Length: 231
Image 1 (cartoon, rainbow, N blue to C red):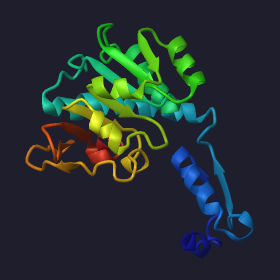
Image 2 (image 1 turned 180 degrees about the vertical axis):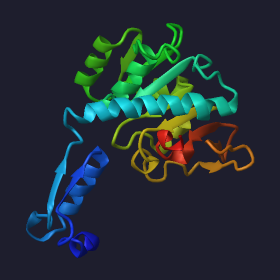
Image 3 (image 1 turned 120 degrees about the vertical axis):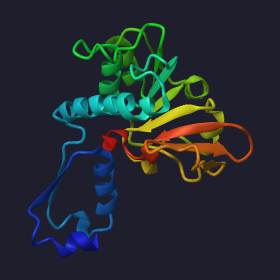
Image 4 (image 1 turned 45 degrees about the vertical axis):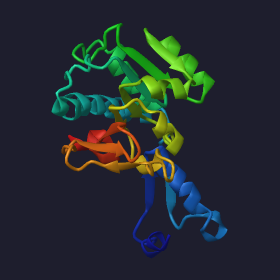
């Protein structure tokens, strides 16, 4: 807030394009006198035009997973080495990722086979219905626990907290986790308390976490930062 006030005579306005940013501005607004920023702030985070940007982000996330993250671990670059891929969140970016993996006619190299399970998990019934209608061979579900126990790759493409400490305890060992935004916004506080980094097993694109109490591990792409930023 102090920074915003200090630059208020030098900034004409600000356009926010992420939902997390929009939420942050809304929280910050409460601390300003009169509930107004010292300059114009607008958001396109939930606008139609945001969908065009999300398509590009979705493609870049898949490119990063294929070309850098998974290939570095010897997993087939076409993602066909994975039996179950899960997308949490079916907003602009989640929708774009699902389209890349299941339906995109101009990206045949990334299309999943019918044998690969693609699950989409969202808390919104309308979005789940939309996912079922938009994509062939998609498992649209609210069954978070079952998906966490079975998925080989989890892509977090939402703006709110997705994984808690209890959720991490249910993960299938060896699962890959990729974020479409910072894990600070996706992991609950204390979510990783039962895990520690395995520096010896980690690679540049993948950080390996191992349980403090058993043999369970998971691999976090780009150390929890948005996976497409690794390109």
